[in-house]
Amino acid sequence: MGCILPESPRLAYCSGMDRARFGMFDFSPSTGELRRNGIKVRLQAQPARVLAALVTRPGQIVTRDTLQREIWSDGTHVDFERGLNFCIAQVRSALGDSAEAPHYVETVPKQGYRFIANVADGGSNGLQTVPGVPSGSGFSIPEPTTFLAPPGPFGTDWNRPARS
Figure 1 (tube, rainbow, N blue to C red):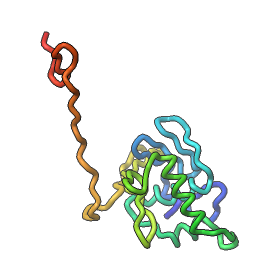
Figure 2: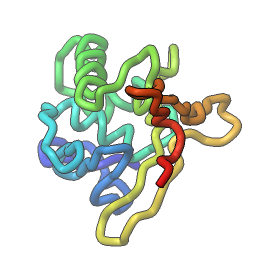
Figure 3: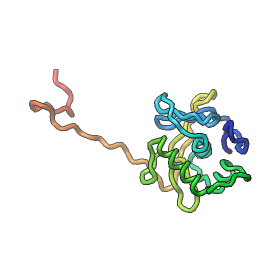
Figure 4: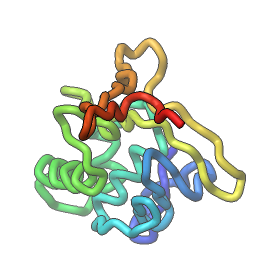
């Protein structure tokens, strides 16, 4: 299960997922196009392939070996570790994500990476949500925090409904 990108004949098409939607992002695994709130986000081809490999397997650990086989062909001679680290850094930068407090790409030490956000298949089949992290994994998304505004000018408390 992976996605085919035009430059990557080594990947199999991603189970019919035309467009993946997660958070404020819309991603086309087949073209590598990433949009945030409808605005195109620059993402180079190789980092886009890595994102496609992760997004099409939400909640699953994608091993470094799997990424190496799918992203870099057998005849490619590169420093794989440096190349993969660069790609992950580019993906995180494009998503506004961080390794320390991930919302999208989680590092699984000594194994690989996992896409932890819920992914909605926004293709021609309509929206279908795929959970990002399996239940019982120990990962949880914190509950939203309510922030109260300080009292306004002239004793107005903006946290209370206005009186008419």
